[in-house]
Length: 251
Image (cartoon, rainbow, N blue to C red):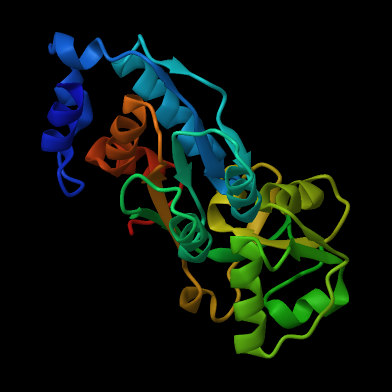
């Protein structure tokens, strides 16, 4: 009953599943558990989304979400890790899940994100674009990670051949190295800088608009009933409003 109500209210992304839960005993009586695997860049909005979902369905046992590089999450699932929902930071990593037959439904796009150069507050090295990275130390994501794949495409398109001091396994690690003063800059998503506005500034590199990452979400094979409901919640107007508050674009 709850699933039908949420699906009807959210449809193609319109509506608000909170309307389905409020005043409807069947929707709020949903039980079971929910485990979500999500790209590291989604941690703040998904923490908020899971908290809101828990208020809608208080009988659902929501486990700690697992946030990491999308490729790392896919590997864990391929090796037998249990989760109900997967959200990745690009479509190619999600393709590996569908190729392995681990999905219970077709993945749906729910957000977008764009690369920026993260620099310390005040931009002490005066970085204005990619060539300026040659005058400082910088880090990027590993190429198998969505932010690293986007960075590789950006560098190739702009003919930039600078050498990073390291390649991290998720975008959070890149942002934190800049925050901690380990390096002078890092290639991250705009949302990673927005969530650390006291410590970082964003420099939009030339060509960034051509390597926008699209985020898909999917209910996984064998998922608890709450899995499908959470996917619909993320796709709803209420879910997309939360994502927009954290700086994510519409799909």
